[in-house]
Image 1: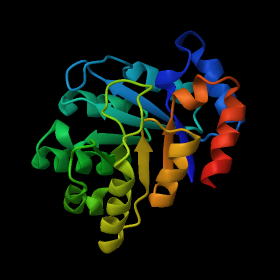
Image 2 (image 1 turned 45 degrees about the vertical axis):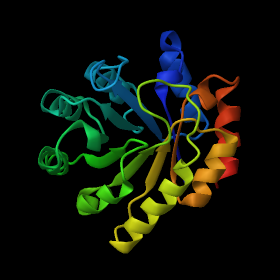
Image 3 (image 1 turned 180 degrees about the vertical axis):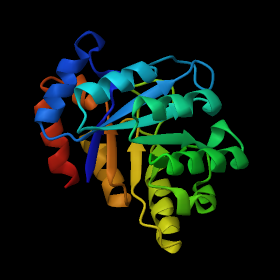
Length: 219
């Protein structure tokens, strides 16, 4: 089980400090939300932040959640910046282009992720499973932090796990959105193995305490 804190909810003016506290609590991967104000209505970080992150924390994984329908510009930029994994939205491009960029990531030694919005049928995973290192199921609609977990996400997680097991592809399922002590347990029991938590970790007091509490719940 892996916790991947979303730095979107950290203190931007003390970002390095917050990341360091999470690493000291045992975190080895961070979820970096890239929003382009087009595919989703909000705007967040760019490649330079990822480059700075890898410079300061070279042994810590940078997982890039690319919420953009401009992969031609952004995927190469984040690969160059040092991303360890890039997760692409199924809804952001047609399947031919998605296959192209998954192949591009593989050829550049970057791990691949496929992201599905809450209303996208999980069956589409079958078309890409051989190329994937991870599947990210959104448990809220993307674009803003601090939203509530959508209840039918539990069934979607279980179905995705069933599909991946059928194609005999050992791909971990990640969940993102409204993850807290209650929803993390629901997601874990349904088959999730990677948990993105933003507000729960960075907005509820001591970071290490929150990380350890969540770890106890999902182990």
